[in-house]
Image (cartoon, rainbow over all chains, first blue to last red; front, side, top):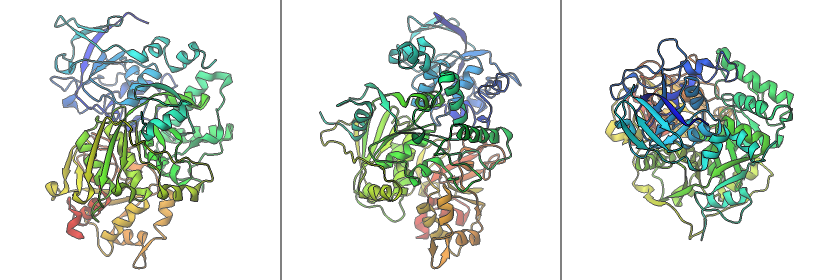
Length: 186
Length: 431
């Protein structure tokens, strides 16, 4: 596992539901086909109303034009990130767009499980409303061992909740690797 | 210390004497349900992870309902159904309900009930957030993603954290203008879309046990709109009778202990309820119908696992009898059984289907249809800046199609009354 995750922050509001992360009409593409599955990156966060995309100012597209990978690799959300449907396509789409971690005040259960069990990205819980203090385009870094977020743009540091029970699954890679390591499956 | 019904089913499913909220346990799964959107990626992960050793843990316990993107020309969506069809054939899956055949059932959550897969005291997982619907049968049911489902498919097990429970007691009786949808909207307004996160919502009280199975499923269906892991109602005689008609499987009636621990308890008097709506763009943005009365509409939508059941259409038909709708109104039966019953059930000798046709409604085939937007050619899909009132369960931005559309969620009675006027209308004005 890497020691830190570094990148540009993309900031969103509260209750970013899975239809905003990947609208239902896009759930038809193959997740296995390397080329076709890039479409999930292309449409990641395309359901977020533009005025709410890239806070505090808004009107910042997460994906530029026809690209399939975003310049932003860390998403900062508010409360109840990933609410709504059970579609695993949501954390998958963020991963395809190049997102390595999401930091939010709280998560909807199924989205949280999907992020971890599928090994798509790390869902960190913030101890405060970081989407009010971090701006889109800030250069940020997560120090994994220390559960710490550094905002290199503003020179501020924030502590994150430890990953707790899900850490072994994240360290293993995904639920299947974890189950193999612990001898549950061969 | 006592346990709630949810905790008792967890203990049973995990082979333990007792559990407490916060425990992580491995549950034995009694039924795994999937559909055309999440089935193909689940199968893909299962094949990739188990490789040559990929084996379905118990074919009888796997149930597949194509239901989401069924009546569309979208080639990718049709490919998904073909993947399910090929999988069912290759592995000889007994419980596959293929579209285009007599076995096709419609929306998975209602089909699970109708086909006898909902058994009190058991554990059911599905690749759909509204899998919590089955909790109306006194069982644990919840939604998971593709990876978790693929793990269950190969092992019959999954890890889950025992949830804290919230108890919602509804005393009294329901006034005739109030339905289960009004009750659950009130709960959502009170605890918000994350008030139930990682928790169980348990419902009881005289008003709840007076409800039909159709209505109970509306309550538990929308537990997920509060972020809950599951919604649950203890099984009683109504459940037993429903189950016995559809299944010969053994069931266990599990009840919460009197001294069980709840994170919080809420108590309501159903007699006091007034019709409610969830305004755009969240199921917890609750107001009374009275306060939003007169809002001009472009479309009315009556369907889905939460608002397209037979009892929903019976109440709607009472409004539409000998009347005409003023805006395009879509009737989307949740299941093929409900669709058939529209031609059997009558009011003053006229079938529900005839009542809807004469009123000028569009009656569609059974499927999830525009509840979740879907491919561009989905019937009833929200276009541009439409203003829609709908019996469905979710109104986040873009849920029914267009991001610009405004969707109000309400009971079938409120939607039917609104269809008659073309604006949001209080059903009490027509009763």
